[in-house]
Length: 354
Ligand SMILES: NC(=O)c1ccc[n+]([C@@H]2O[C@H](COP(=O)([O-])OP(=O)(O)OC[C@H]3O[C@@H](n4cnc5c(N)ncnc54)[C@H](OP(=O)(O)O)[C@@H]3O)[C@@H](O)[C@H]2O)c1
Image 1 (cartoon, rainbow, N blue to C red):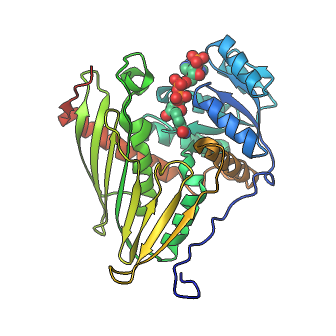
Image 2 (spheres, helix red, strand yellow; image 1 turned 90 degrees about the vertical axis):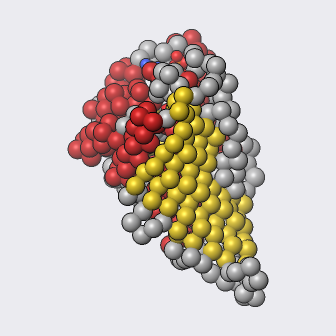
């Protein structure tokens, strides 16, 4: 895609009008990231949260009030009985996702489940199959898929601007001080880098290259089974590859790049949040470079509104899965993570964390 003087032009993101999509009445489970998502959604979309539940009733009341939500339910079952709730955002620790998502689906609610949608590919398959058979939408809250920069990247790839994608290189590592009471360090709560932040690079590689044919992983694991650092090589039938890293003890730049046969695309760090991308084509002597930058917003988490708007749009279209992240792909990403975790459990080095 060239401009009038031969300069490189990037396509504009194709965005849904956040105020033009019929609002759903949402119920939220969890007051951690759940609250940040509500703030973003209320500030930047027509979607409205009408009910909330978590375990700590006093905190839930306070958080709900702070976000203008009047109804708090004592537990998930009560929220699912609420006839004024159309869709449920499940924002609890990963091991709870399967049971809570299946309950929401059985109650006839559309469901957006925080990443990872489940602890394993088998559980993700069970959730997505249940949603298809109930005729409700089930979507993983992999918000990066719905960001404007991701739509620009999708168009750049589809239009062949960087040629055939050959390599995805991405990382997500952040230093999380060791705390056995934190869900990130507690194997029973799904702790570990891979399912919490490593899923972002794996999901991006899947979006660009599809399902890998082989998975090779190395890394470190605590005695209780929490994966601390993982370096992953994914290869594909056409020799494309992904080189990915994730960690709870290493500060990584959180960048992502796609190298192709005619150029490359680099998502701006942190690539999982609304940032932008730079595309470079041509050789060393005739490089052409173009960038797209996310318009200034009040913070990186404003991006959660894009996925909520997309979710409501898909519900209005009668979909049971996201066209940008379908059920088969969600299950495939979990299968890759299952295999990485299996390899680390079998041969990972002991992590020195405490
Ligand atoms: N998309 C993103 O950017 C993003 C960011 C962070 C996390 N996440 C994902 O979101 C999920 C939650 O993470 P978090 O950081 O929000 O965790 P968190 O801060 O530990 O919060 C978990 C919430 O779940 C609630 N909860 C726990 N057990 C429950 C139960 N049995 N029934 C109802 N509520 C229960 C807790 O309630 P009480 O406080 O009342 O005990 C708390 O409000 C994880 O799967 C994580 O991967 C996504």
